[in-house]
Image 1: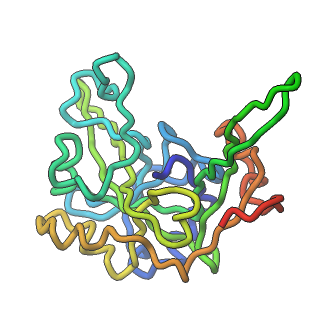
Image 2: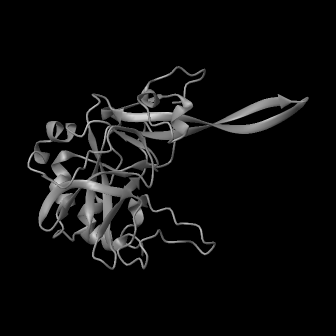
Length: 252
């Protein structure tokens, strides 16, 4: 899955990717940056084709269907909000929630790093009795050269009665690569620059070809390392969240 990520310098978008130099800039897409520990429901920069133009704008990270009556997240039978910040790549064509957006509303989500958590069994002795628990050790994943990259995403635009637009998005996940496998059984789908145009083209309805892009990113292009448990709380939106630390045991 992908439940936290970092995007620090919006200017890297134009410096890293040749295809992004002609982007339409809508509003103030980088106003909330830097974000070292962005979490679902945050408003973040997203690249999407709207009104026949490709541009970068801020969207809320939690997809709200355009058919929503009140602009609020869909709810489960027990009245809890349905998590809509990740979309499983393998089921996009059949998902009632995501299939309309996979066909017609795909986006790119720029990032410089993302987090995942390794579950580590811990045994402690409390008052003479063994107590089993699980610790969550945050791990950062990023490109080996620290360059910006793009998640594959889906977006929706909900409108209120006054016609105001409220765009939102979800990040697509796929199978893990070899680097991710020791940590988690899912990872965000990351696209190569050569595939950006194909992904963003709203006239492209070939879902089979589009699904072929949603594969584990090459392990040899990435690195991963453990970081401070500061990252466990999204209230800690600080650069220290990305600093490597030493751990007693290897996580990989």
